[in-house]
Length: 355
Image 1: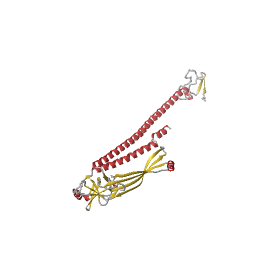
Image 2: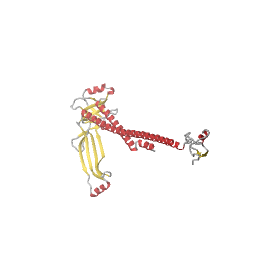
Image 3: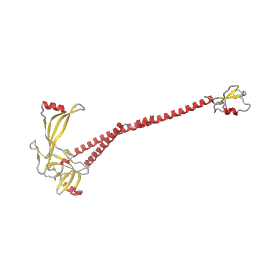
Image 4: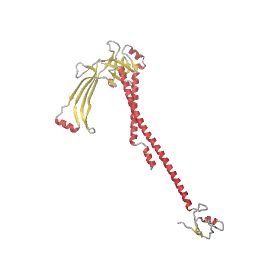
């Protein structure tokens, strides 16, 4: 019974096993994210920096397949044909326009018994126009056509218009909202644009297609950037993100190792206690056997024959009345037979029956 209880106590509980599994899974997820971020940061650091000048076309002509797999280009936004006009701001033109309607409301949390802010995008529309990245100096260098700008991981859009329209509610509406657990606050209307003339840093695949140089999303899992920050600031931002993921992965791994160490320590202590109890049980068994042997040895001389000291006493000698011998030893006594205790002659022998 003790051994069975110890076997059950040595195994980790379901909660401990679940905690270890969840911690290990989280560590694996964070390590995977860290490696992905580190690979992207290394790719960004190794990207080839090119200038928008007359040598760019020659560089692409010499490159294999007229393509630079990962290149950095800095230039200002210039429209190819038509531009997009802001719906709210006069004389505001761009090449990417994003209109967003966002609902704001308060939602009652039945667990914390508090009202929490809740935001939801109810409508969003994005318009684009063809644009190039051109040199900051007019009339110098070449232009690069930007393809699929909405696929960029970091597309820098400037908020040109933002207005909040609060909801108008009657007393009946307020009462109904309290009962339903949702209180509308209003609608926020936002317009974001990538303006013409904005200085952008583009990172992606640079190809020469006919006479047009194009910047497009790269292959091999690398990220596509169209950022208003310069390349050095963009690189520092990605490296800071890598350090953050590295710290998170390290902390999660440390927590996993701590849980594993706790379970292994518990298992070790359990086995050590089990060995100690088994040793105590063995010592107790040996002591019990020794005690039984001692008791048997102490009881044997009480009724043993005084001659052979092995058989039980089985006869009474008369006339002296001594009870000291078994039948075998009595028959082995020399003639004339005499009592081994008092040496008196044995006249007759009476059998002894032990009940």
